[in-house]
Length: 101
Figure 1 (tube, rainbow, N blue to C red):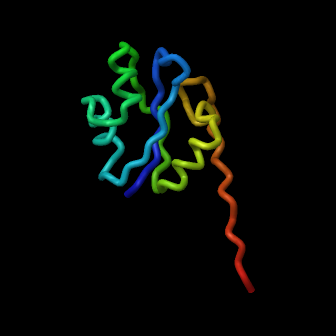
Figure 2: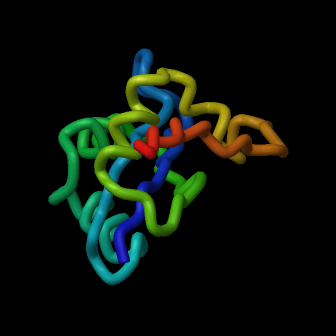
């Protein structure tokens, strides 16, 4: 099952405090392990090289790549990050498709 996940960096690397990713693997844990071993995104590699810690902040189970892009375009990932102090994480509003008829 696919999922979109949010990683939190502590401390941030310059302007980067979060990473949003998508996986269709059996679980987010295996994808996170790839990131931590250095075979994931360049940003996460740079964060680890700088000495920051990487935390799994939120998972949207069943979400697809389009949802990942939507989250990235909004540029307010901290709304879904429990590490940033937001207790309630709102669900993003997904526009309903128009039905002809």
